[in-house]
Length: 114
Ligand SMILES: [Zn+2]
Image 1: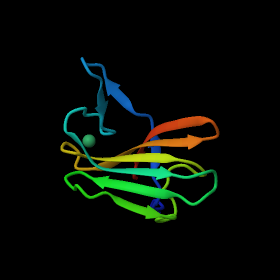
Image 2: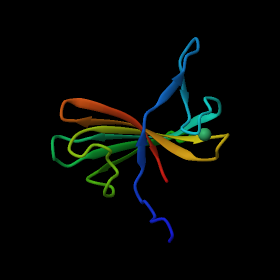
Image 3: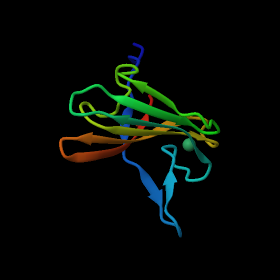
């Protein structure tokens, strides 16, 4: 029986390599070769309309939009969130490091698509 396709990311804990300056480790386990390619910042009053500002590496023009760009875009269910998307030279995967406000806590995890 085929495995059902999961269309949402599976959170995993970020790891760092303890160097002179700590290095973020790709979910594949390699700390070398990560390049951030996009940053999405979601500003949202509790349960309100979100504003999204996105900057793509190498592009000097930010994209700003109001409203929910698509369901699940904001990593926070009800508040603010940040998603930094990386490309990895070693696993050829894109992963996103997420900060999401949730009930007085800040969640911090990798989004890894499976
Ligand atoms: Zn990797």
